[in-house]
Amino acid sequence: MSQKYELMVIISGKISDREVEERLKGLKEALGPSLTFEEIWGLRSLAYPIKKQSKGHYAVWNFISNAEALKELEGELKHFPDLLRYLLVTVPENYTPITLAQVEAGLEKLRAEKEEKRGAKNAQSQNRPARPERTPPQLAP
Image (tube, rainbow, N blue to C red; front, side):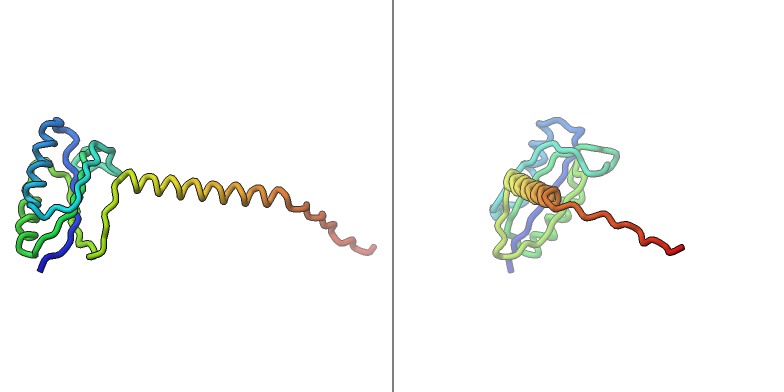
């Protein structure tokens, strides 16, 4: 039975652009004709060093595969040259991939909404009447 998958890879940032293109082309060919989405993010900083490297070339693919072909793909990935990391996950049948630009636009919108709420909250607190000062109770002599 076929299932939908998403594969993200990080290829060494120390190899040439031509070599990166060759590696990505090889991975794309390994996925076969069932490819449904592809996005190359390019060279990006890593969140933490991997194999003493701080940058890597990212790429994401969505594809349909069966269990047998998937095992074969995972075997190839484990021995793929210059591959720093990969993540292969099953995605729901109704999953629709989105581009990095769409993700970043959504994050920017959330940041703007949060900032707007923060501004409204600050304005609201500035419009409150000041609290009357409390005077401490006087002790009788």
